[in-house]
Structures are given as structure tokens and as C-alpha cells.
Image 1 (cartoon, helix red, strand yellow):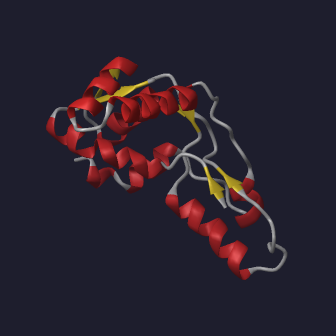
Image 2 (cartoon, helix red, strand yellow):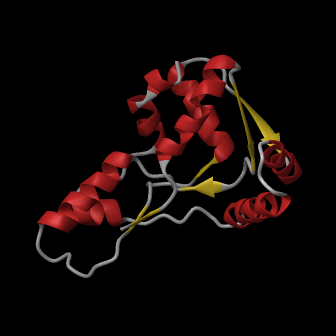
Length: 151
């Protein structure tokens, strides 16, 4: 299995949302079709227990690309309170990483990877539905399942 971006990565914002009501990230318009962990599990169960999956490779994604800024907006809508988005520049991210102990080369490499990922459109596959018979869950559904983590 090759899952795309994980919806659960939004949990990294939970402390900031509870404390400040603001998420600070670079590349707010970068889109990813983030996937719910239950959809990954559903495909894995079928691939491991049902006939016809041996040797297959499955790229699993959520059902729609969602930008980082829209993920933050959706969290606010689901938890029914304002959540702001503060767009960081790549230089902001690099400077923060260096201040946290990363070497300049490590920070440059990681920021370069972020830039490369931000330039890709959010690929969408139908794998979840094809394998499980159930459509992939949206990011909004994921947030509803995890709303308590943000309140």
C-alpha cells in the first residue's frame, strides 16, 4: 500500500488550535487528497484477507484534494469556532528549524522537500472504493471523527 497524505497529520495542529486558534504553516494553497486512517485500514484488511490482491500495489488517497488552508478552515467549521491560518514563508520554516537545532543543510533539505511537495497537485485515486466497496471518507468526515482532539 502507498497511502498519500495522512489526514491524521492535522493532529499536529491541535495544540495550536486549542491555545491560539491559529495554525501557522507554509504553502497554504498546496493541495493533497489526505486519507482517513480507517480507509487505509479498510484497504489493508481486504488486501490481506481477500483473494486477488497478492502482488498488487495500491495507491490510496482521500476522495478530493484539499489545500492546507482549507483543512484549517474545515476544522474551524466542524468544531464551530474560528481557526485562523498564518502562511509561513519557506525562509520562516528554515529559520525555525535552525533555531530548533537542525543544521542549515538539514533545514535546507527539508524545506526543499516541502517546496517540491507543494508543487504537486493532490492526486486522487478511487482505490478505497474499488477495494472496499465504500467511498473514501472526506477530510470533513475525518475532522468530525476527531473533533474532540481540537476542542
